[in-house]
Length: 241
Ligand SMILES: C[S@@+](CC[C@H](N)C(=O)[O-])C[C@H]1O[C@@H](n2cnc3c(N)ncnc32)[C@H](O)[C@@H]1O
Image (tube, rainbow, N blue to C red):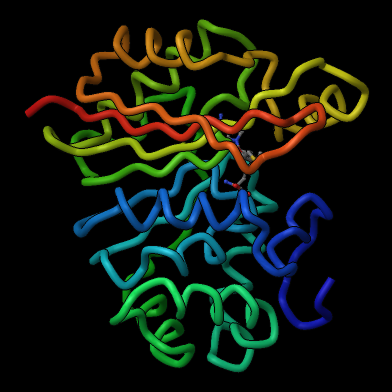
C-alpha cells in the first residue's frame, strides 16, 4: 500500500494499482450515467474518492457513506490530506488513463479542487434503514447493495435507495457475481464485503422492478475474465418522475 494514502483494509488496496480492463469499464459506466446534481455513493468503502475521479467533473455535490464507521473514518482522513500531490502519488496511472478518455477532464490539481469543492462530510448510513427522502439525483452502488444477508434485505435496501432518490433520479451500480460461495467469498460475506444474495441479471431486474424502479438498463461486462468472481453486471434504474 502507498505509505501516504490512508487505507486500513487490504480489500481496498486495488485502488492503488493501474486500472484493469474491468475497472476501466466501471469508470466508463460511471462517466456515462452519473450526470449532475447531488450524488450519494452508498457503500463507498475506502474507495469512494478513487471512483469519484471518474465522475466528479460532472456533478455538483458528493456524499460518501458506508455502514462501516471505520471506512467512513478513513475517507475523512483521505479528505483531510487531499491535495494534487497525494492524488498523483496514489492514482497517477488512473488519472493518466482518465485523461485519455475525454476532452475536458481536469488535470490532477483540478481533480483535487473539484473533489474538495463537491464533497459533503462523509457519514455512516445503513441502507437497511430509511436514510433520506427524495434527496439525491444519483445514488451510486459499486458492489454494495448486494452486500446484505438475503433477498428480503436486498429488496429493503433497494426500496430505501428508491425513496432517497428524487423523482427522475437514477441508481447507478455494478455487481460482481460469484460462481461459488468459496472460502474467500465466505470471509468477505462475514466482513460485509459480499452478500449471501448473489443475483443474476434476471433476478436483479425483477428486484429493481419490485422496488419501484423503471427504465432499467443491464449490461454484462466481458472483460472480467475467468475465476470465481467472474461476472460483472452493470445496471441503472430510475425512480419514475
Ligand atoms: C464490496 S464493498 C464495495 C466498496 C466500494 N463501493 C468499492 O467498490 O470498492 C461493499 C461495501 O458495502 C458496505 N455495506 C455493506 N452493507 C451495508 C449497509 N447495510 N449499508 C451501507 N453500506 C453497506 C460495506 O461496508 C462495504 O464498504
